[in-house]
Amino acid sequence: MIGLAAAAFGYVALTGGFKPSYQSITTTTTTSTGTSSGCPQNPSFVNSFTDAAQVGVSLSGTTIYYRNQATKQTVTTAPTVAGTFDIVVTNTSYIPSIINNQVLTCNSNLLSTSLYALTNVIIIIFTNTGNHVLNGTAYTATASAASGEPINETSSTNTMNWPLRFVGTNLKSTGNQMVVYEGSSGNNVSSASLSGAIASGVGAPRGYTSKIAGSYVAWYLIPAQQNGGVWTSNLQVNPSGSNSVNGTQYLTVYNLQPFVDSLDGTINTGTALADSYNNAKYLSYQQFTWAEK
Image 1 (cartoon, rainbow, N blue to C red):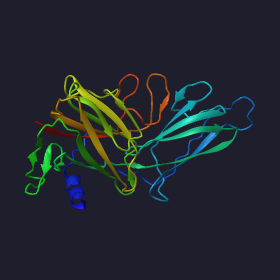
Image 2 (cartoon, rainbow, N blue to C red; image 1 turned 90 degrees about the horizontal axis):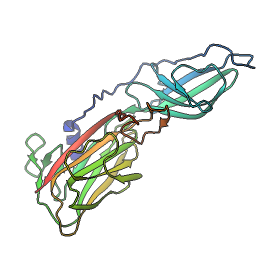
Image 3 (cartoon, one colour; image 1 turned 45 degrees about the vertical axis):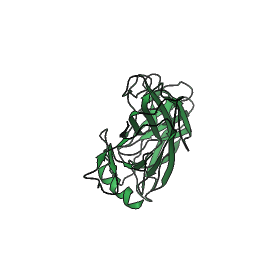
Image 4 (cartoon, one colour; image 1 turned 90 degrees about the vertical axis):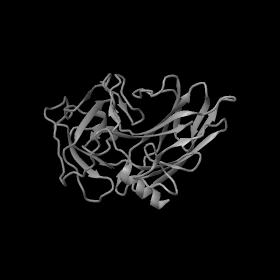
């Protein structure tokens, strides 16, 4: 299994413009200006943002979103009036961090959090017949990654089980992830489930465009993979009645992030692909296909 994971890493396609990197070692300080009513000293935040996996590595170049709990306004300018805020801290190639119920009083206030550098997981998928899927290419006993053959399994009226393994990267994290399964005609599938998912739903989530007209689509939220952790699961697809699970199967894995919704400034904790205006908010994705014929 270790050999498969290493091979998968070399060939999994990363899309969405993901470019992981670490930031320079500095500390950023933001001080607000102006005096709020009744405050003898101007309210201010002193920022301390660090890499969650590397002790002593501070981050610069952050963008901070402040949502005032009283006014419901979200801005990127450091607040000048005392209050309570929900805050999103973002940094290039890092997963944003949320700080809830941060109180700003009439003096200097420490604003501190840690962010994980972003990575994609190595994804290993085995089809119902035991072939290892690699973006539409199979590993078999006689086929290498470079000369692999397209997956063409025999369709079946039986329940289909596709084992999955998600392998993380040391010192980095994927953030929350969403797995979207799409396959066959909607009339041919009665249900699909992903073991270990923390939330799920049937139908295309906002921000996902179906690949097949009339297909069955389901989505699943799964936990972040941090510091080289491994998460194993099983995708089970049940046919409807005497119908077969057939045709092209799609499995797309998205790296999610906390974000500020463009509609009203509310903060999403990293559970959606897009905001209320259907603007994409995921960080990156990987897609796998195979066929049941």
